[in-house]
Length: 254
Image (cartoon, rainbow, N blue to C red):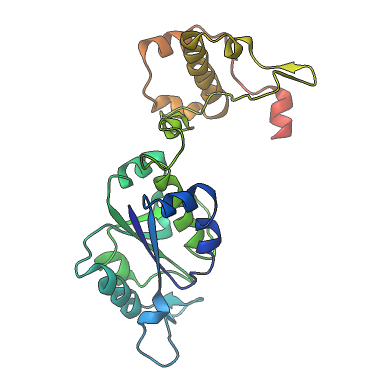
């Protein structure tokens, strides 16, 4: 899968892309990330990529000419793959959208800067807009890395465990169950006995029930959208009132 990133600041990308799982995915050819400096597609001597907004107001706006030239030079006209603007105005990026994007062989990610994009970029170049949260960053570079990371780890072969991504929080609509590793007891806190039992059926049931409990405790809103089985619903219905709810101490620590 290939990601084409259009940015005014390519420097932050390589340190992260050359680390751990993404580095191995790129080395093995499963993931390709091409960085395109928008300034390289300007035609003036000062490489101007932004200008003052018509109608007045603070800040600068990214110009359409260099961005159209950059995307169309790399991807053709019209572009032959999704062109995603990373902007606070976009819909929230989530696991479901990552699962959809991983089906694309190629994605273009356009990083905003300054006050935003000339509206003609939104209307005539982008195919969608994504945001990683309801807050504002200084640019779209961090959101682009978030999208690359979240999508790339869904590609078969990128993670060592072929089913690893499917157990993650949000992959099934629930938060992930608790995880433990050695030692079996630490400072008097033992690992749950069921995980040491070797009974894979019991372990699977425990993990599912713990995922339900954890989701009810931390993100009960997700239960309305999760894919719940009749056994899940029966388990939730059988919980005592308040089970899985944060304790007063947890509320104070949050």
